[in-house]
Image 1 (spheres, rainbow, N blue to C red):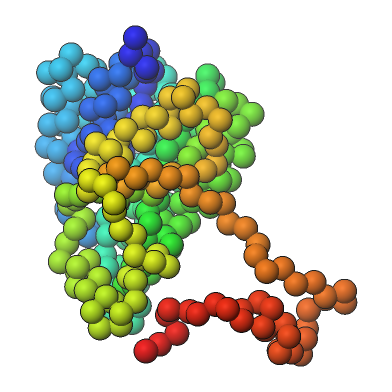
Image 2: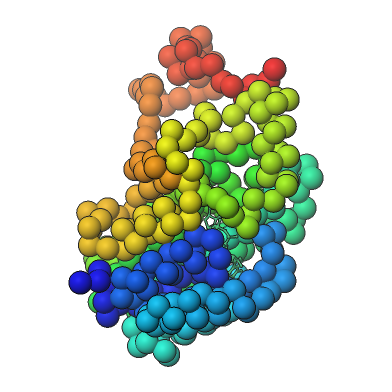
Amino acid sequence: MAQFEGKVAVITGAGRGIGRETALLMAREGARIVVNDLGGGPQGGGSDAHFAQEVVDEIKAAGGEAVAETSSVTTMEGGKAVVDCAMDNFGRLDFLVNNAGIIRPRRLTDMSEEDFDIVVAVNFKGYFATMHAAAPHLKKQGGAIVNFSSPSGFGHYGMVNYSGAKEGVVGMTRTIARELAEFGVRANAVRPISGPSNMNIPEVYETLQYALDTLHIPPLSGHWIGNSGPDGRPWNVAAVVGWLCSDRSSNLNGREVYINGGHIALVQEPEFIRSQFAVDGWTFDKLCEEGTSRALTWDIRDRFTGK
Ligand SMILES: NC(=O)c1ccc[n+]([C@@H]2O[C@H](COP(=O)([O-])OP(=O)(O)OC[C@H]3O[C@@H](n4cnc5c(N)ncnc54)[C@H](O)[C@@H]3O)[C@@H](O)[C@H]2O)c1
């Protein structure tokens, strides 16, 4: 028996890459799918309706049910249009997968306000817009939300807009998980590494190589995220999204899952380490005492403090 028989899924950015694979997988498992995709460029801008339609055609050819939707998720109207499409065509909504994304790698001093705003609009506000519209429907019978974060959120040289947005997605997901749990709706985040991707533009490699070769620092995260198994592929990530929507992961809510090819991991929740306590509260002078600084930092060698 297919896992998602009778269910309806909205998947944003499903015309290509990971979203496409997720749409195909969930349709194979019996879900009816809204394939949303604006079809713009990897850095934003432009539109092309044929990406969403191609995936719909593929699903239908395999005997599934799907409808194309080409709104941009960056506005509240766009988010609502995507969700309305599910209700108008299929009459219910069980799963929302916020996968749409763009990238604009620039160093902080080269990054314009527009570079920042457009990345935040797609990767962060766009997720709010769809969740805002979807929540009243999901609450009716329960369901699941899966939001796309990124390992870039751990810190990524040249990606202040993208890493900020993607880390924001995790905080937002933790909050939604708490708000919707009583209605049987779970919300989790995915941090994938997967190629090939439309987003793997030359600027990504330029900043990555500079950090590695010139600064000798890990460009992404606190250490190099290597891969001891096969390279991450979109279908590996789609499998995780499907699993997060299925009852098999019903004890997981408000959490993050990392996936890179053959490596899957639950990401640790942020926690306090090296707590120090001051009975009258911490002051600047007390913090500057040698003992306090030592207790908080003495064996930490920071790789980003300079050459
Ligand atoms: N590929 C990776 O290694 C990787 C790593 C970390 C995070 N991610 C995240 O995973 C998700 C999918 O990545 P991918 O590699 O499949 O990328 P992709 O570029 O292949 O697909 C993203 C899709 O989103 C669509 N999109 C962009 N802006 C949109 C908008 N405003 N409204 C609707 N659709 C829009 C694009 O048209 C595109 O088809 C993204 O959120 C990305 O940030 C990917």
